[in-house]
Length: 452
Image 1: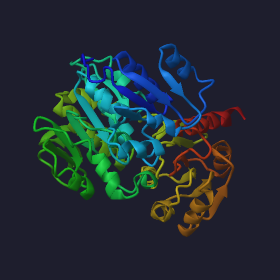
Image 2 (image 1 turned 120 degrees about the vertical axis):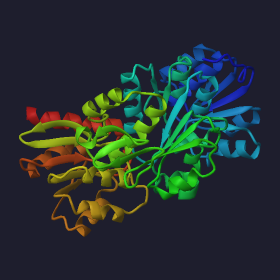
Image 3 (image 1 turned 60 degrees about the horizontal axis):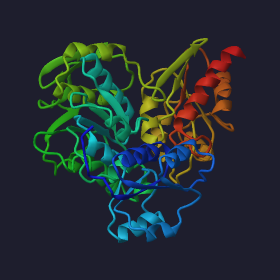
Image 4 (image 1 turned 180 degrees about the horizontal axis):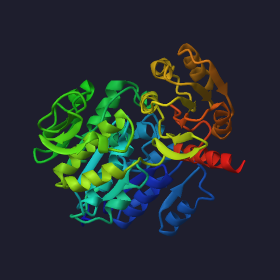
């Protein structure tokens, strides 16, 4: 960790406790800041709040009282999910108080080169692939960011020869000012999180923050097949390294004659890659570009691609029961992710879908649903997804209470050779705390089938 006095004696409000707020508050306190933590929830029984209070940090729970803003704060560190319409943040914006997320703190203290990955879909798979390839190439890399490990906490414990692989959401990137990754990856852009950002233009601008402070010694790895991505990267000072499924990109990664190339160098035959799905091939192209920039040898890349079968909750193979294959794709929290999951399979598929209603229709899912044998819906969007399934001509449509009940229902409808796929196309927050909890419930219910 760099020695920094950037936060010393600064009055800093950490808005939202959670994992990122807890880590940021502890670190800022260690760096000499005068920290106040505020959370909407009551924190009376919170172990994290108790730890912070022991350190002498002022912790206020049970709402966001306006009197907080009567204090002079030099900086606000907000939980990424808190919208800027929050009254405290609105007041801060009016008073020109900087608002950041903890990834900005991570950048300010780390000695490591950062490889930042963002996009509407594929972030976790690409992040994990890069990490595994770096490790296989004997580089002491670390995972951080939106993948589940708090970036500033990891950054505090890395050195200059340890690359920091960081998954980044649009929410996190909105709260950056100086953030500058050595390698910035933008996988794709489509309509997502519009309830937070308002427009796809604002969403794209948030994602493009990943390039904003890059210099000509840095690299921007971008999807040449996505016109929005290519528009967003136009202003970068970084060296552009494109990847493409559809064209030869001699300065990046591409497919030619069923082989994967990097700058005209053969890396691996496509037939050797075990991770299923065209969308995963796009993720692989991005990952290979990033690690080749870092000098990872082809042998290490090949080993990972011949053995890596996916990350938990992202097209995760669970097991086979009497010829039925079960896949957990709980991280598919939007329509595009579910479209790509469905098209990854050639076998007859029973889809389990539903979740938080963000006000959108599911008409965009209809073409993909035409490949599906049966649909089982649950959650707030059950009726909407059932309507889309009817429009796709699916005859077998069931609605159940939750994922746990969807699994035995799907099994009862299935035949040998079928794929049973949880790919909800929605966030989990109507019934589950996280998509991980939803996926774990699916896996547990699959295992229970063998017991029953």
